Image 1 (cartoon, rainbow, N blue to C red):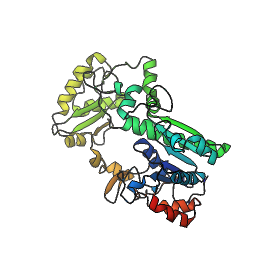
Image 2 (cartoon, helix red, strand yellow):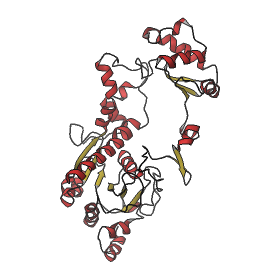
Image 3 (cartoon, one colour):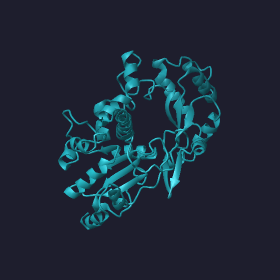
Image 4 (cartoon, rainbow, N blue to C red):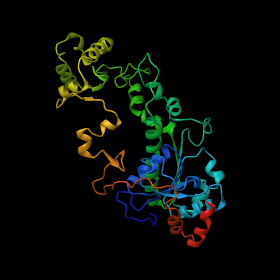
Length: 382
């Protein structure tokens, strides 16, 4: 454990993480670690020093140091910070950190206990390691994108949740925290190779298991959880809203039939008769189209049916359940999710707002052991 300040709350209080500035999944991992109390020092570009962060949610909870990674003095300063860190995360293409002089071998030589987390789309090796790509490409090659959507439509783009965030940032955060446990037990750091293709594949574990036992077809829109089942999909309401139906278990399916007035209808008598699913879906669509979203919400309220309204981003924050749990909060007018998961013994504090780029440069460098006057002399040079 480092000598980082321990004023932060959360299970990772006292852990210091260096984040080499990047976009998407790397900063998301940094946010997750910072949310749980880690001191995350983000290395930003000097050209952006003094500006407000362009990512007020992803960059929350950090300290920001502006250093030129193309200048030997900047690299030396980063290495000094790394000497007192527990972990480092970077999201460059394979080989870039090495060319900068901040590769794993160099950093671990300076700090043998360091956990060195690497975030890429394709991984550190393999035929596509140096190829460009985005979330959509990674989840396509991993097999997730091809499993999404209706059979007669193009696969939908699931925001960047599956690859960047779930298969990327969360995987890296898990890898770093797991390796930190090992480092504290053994005294030795290591490299964590987190690839979005790998993380996407891991998220398909349940589906692959169902495929293996003959309970899943390798095709879109014909399965239980991919919209193929009429009792597990969304339906449009008369006002243009939508309802989400997840009435899989027989007891929930029975309540669904009751609320919709379809109990006793022979078409719905055999819930898992796949031959009847298309006709069942058409009938349910017609029924849901007969009332507004709010009317259906009221009809299903308090029932054991697994039917809920579909909300937009800002609307979801006002749902009574999310309000009661504090799932979302506002900071300086910015709506954002609260830290998760929650820890009873070491609860996280409300994250600090994203810092002004470079706001902590002097303080962090002095803490790392650089002479204050020398730091002041370097500042005009970036």
